[in-house]
Length: 299
Ligand code: NAD
Image (cartoon, rainbow, N blue to C red; front, side, top):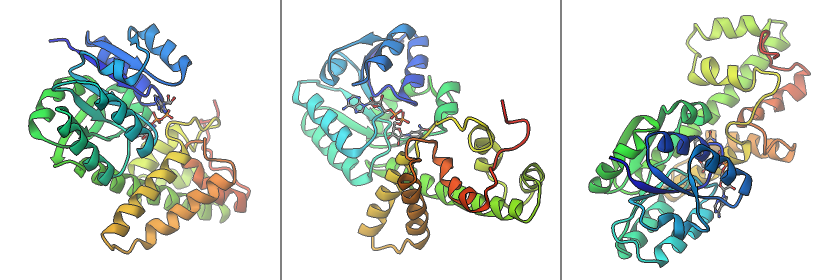
């Protein structure tokens, strides 16, 4: 069965997700501040509308993929001002659990519902339609949107009440960021000691320090000549800040995240905020003078 849905935020993730929704035959009304992104979505078969509120009109679900909590709050407030009985807002942005819980309450009061549904798998996962989606919110709404989300997700988890999806997502990003920094430090130390980078990578991917970042993500980003941006360093800096705020409210000590976030702050200061988040590792390259680019990745 096909549906009318809205989508706000057509960036790295949103632009790829809507391609799957359109391909599945859904009527997708799109809105973004960036007109170039809207034109690209229309070329894929989506329908351009003039505002987030219009994207929600007659939609069974309104999807969001936006940069920050204040932007999500602004868009949701605008949408909830109009009467959308039964509308389900599915927020794929990475924001904080508290804001998600507040927005879920606002939506309920307006006769709609709001699910926090952050994603993992990045640009490659969005392109391939294999994203992992971790959803917090009421079960009835989750059940209604699963057939839509399935068009672009490989794994869908209903993890608990409102806010739970974001709590897991922030932990996922904190763990990934710490892994990236540890790999940058370890690999830089090996190459500074004279080991060939390709050799180091071949050994470590078969050893106890192997990870998804090392074997799957670095070969598409850090290890290449171009280092294309899939997920901006600025965004990871934001997510680590959200993690620290949430953990702070729970009075949890966070020595690892505090240190890792400082390295991302240094990356921003050094002009790397718009680059892929793996470029945080260039901090170490500045010391060794050796670029962490593998052979055969120079196309
Ligand atoms: P992006 O910057 O590429 O896209 C964001 C889009 O939102 C842009 O097109 C921008 O023009 C639009 N936008 C900003 N403010 C707007 C507003 N008020 N109204 C309408 N449109 C607006 O970001 P992205 O990489 O696609 O990430 C989106 C969200 O998903 C972020 O919260 C990010 O943390 C999260 N996320 C990203 C990745 C990734 O690999 N890129 C992975 C998982 C989660």
